[in-house]
Length: 70
Image 1 (cartoon, one colour):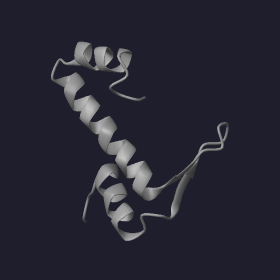
Image 2 (spheres, one colour):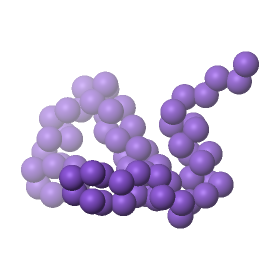
Image 3 (tube, helix red, strand yellow):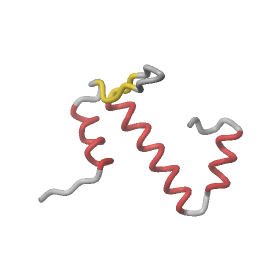
Image 4 (cartoon, rainbow, N blue to C red):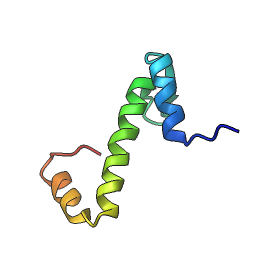
């Protein structure tokens, strides 16, 4: 059985159909294609890696000064 995590599946789907609509935020009515959703997931993965490495203070500072959009 070929096991892949969600990030790998999303990445592969973004390569196959980057402009296909992937998600619609119900309240904000924002639409995300697979390319945008994959990009957001990659940024989130990077932030999580920084947090696990003890960098939460740096992330909070970057958010506060506008260097990171959440």
